[in-house]
Image (cartoon, rainbow, N blue to C red):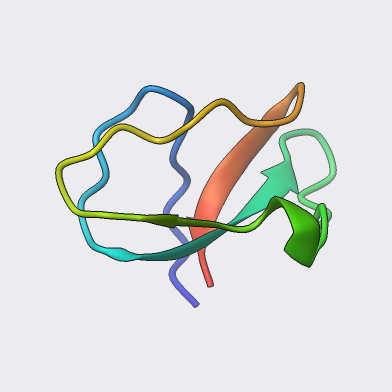
Length: 55
């Protein structure tokens, strides 16, 4: 798993599946909130105070 954090609206650097993690606690939001994002697309809206990390 990559350690890089990505936020909603940021350009995706690599086609992959990304999980959402809480900013304050880094806890995983669950598979329901995973998103497959193509390279060059923007990350979709996330849960409040959550970022994306590659799974």
